[in-house]
Length: 201
Image (cartoon, rainbow, N blue to C red; front, side, top):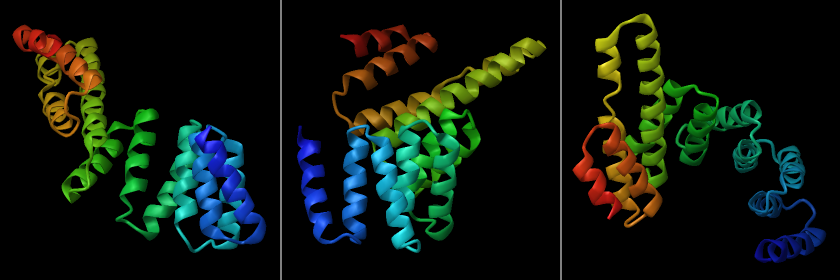
């Protein structure tokens, strides 16, 4: 397996340069791709102990904790990274994802908007923002419905914000089947069945 060969290479290099910060971070990132999270965290903890002022290991540890679904620990490291470098867009993307996973949709949306307004967005950023609009508006609409405020329910069930972000994502990820399929489902929610059929053909 490719990741195992990379880990072996970094380990051999690390034996000769035992305090190499970049080697620790690179090996941790490779461990993360192989879902060997505990080993990744061990490397990152050591890297942070060696050079606590450098941000790469802090950000990576936040990402690894996020991948491992330890969202509060992830947020602590990502916030620390962003406190010292507000323009770290990798940390912003992962913080937005962690906020989304714990259903803090407004902070997630704030981070995604910062990324998009900075011009550093990729297709995944737009997809994530579409999901945030979907759940944020859908949950609010459900609450309005319980309270009998049906006009507000109708207003919040309008998924045009989600649709706009799906369209932006599709422009970036041309012919991405999963994204187009999700857009088709959204067209159905909006009763735009002809457009939904067009996406499924």
